[in-house]
Length: 292
Image (cartoon, rainbow, N blue to C red; front, side, top):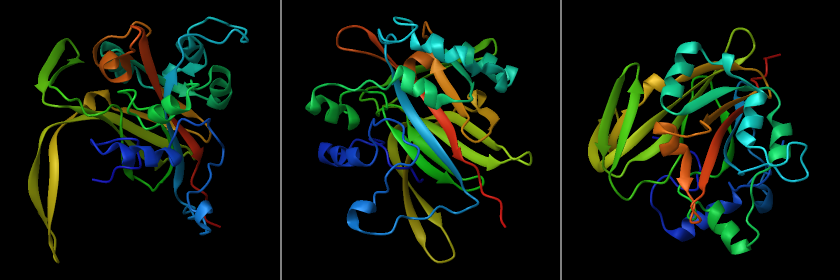
């Protein structure tokens, strides 16, 4: 399984997590992020013309808009939904998401909202480093820019692996499906595929890894490879499949009054008793370039 650079996907030493800060932190969204090769004097890696370039950001939302904003004190989630076209997600999926405490839709110009709402930054440099290393918060707080080949699949950790067992309940129609999972970790799977109409079809769904790692063997013509993995619960009933044009974004966020899976994966209790909320943004930064 290939998992892109994250602040965490498995428990690792703190030094490794801190080292990753320089590559994927909570910096403001930039149109062209610096290449990790620049500081080494190496040429930047080229992106294939037929690849879709995607921005994926886990966005910690402030509790209210700043005093300088025209809607000072308003809930940022309400501002986001004003500019979000929820009809871009089919009705059946919207119903399934809302039954599990989630909403999703398409935003045409997320850059303006990012500048307006902002990404919270702690004043204390040490606290900022810990937050960027994802050890001061249980929810992901990161951004990535990655090329996606046609049908390529990537996965992103939404939360750290739980240290204890958790009960997870999924609403499916009129039924509730509940399971108690050992040390679960919530992940987001993302896939991009060019459409015939010139847009990019985004498919994304959550899944949960849980239980102990188990060893298996994968045989090919040349070698037998050892594979270590945990059990998986793929939540296909919450799959979102929607087309996006260049610079359009898919927003996934918990409801204003979070409950169910939305509350479990995208909110956390702060030490002061308030609730931290994280929205997921998936943006098409560049569509595949047509061959000349």
